[in-house]
Length: 100
Image (cartoon, rainbow, N blue to C red; front, side, top):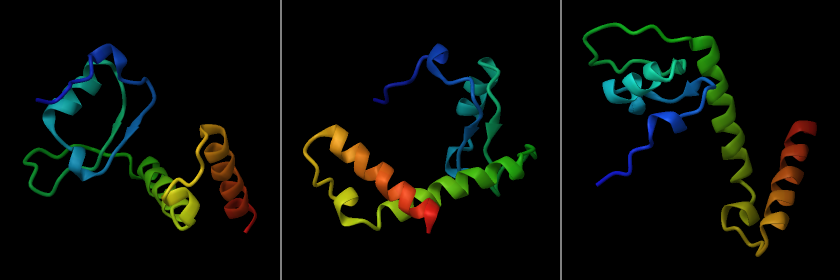
């Protein structure tokens, strides 16, 4: 049904995710690969799991960046036919947001 990612393909950097990804299976895979899980626990979780909320703020900033990128119609609908043109337009918009 679902194509499960082999344990050896999970990245070594911290995994930042929202509450929807708070499940024992994913946390077990991350523990096996010694990857830090920055996932806030769901409200209905019985055992309290600590979360680094300072690092979790980065997820919010990145998500806001992608929302700002999607405000440009050309990026949202992907008008560019070539990958290089599309990437260049994303970089151009990112520079515009950084300077603004």
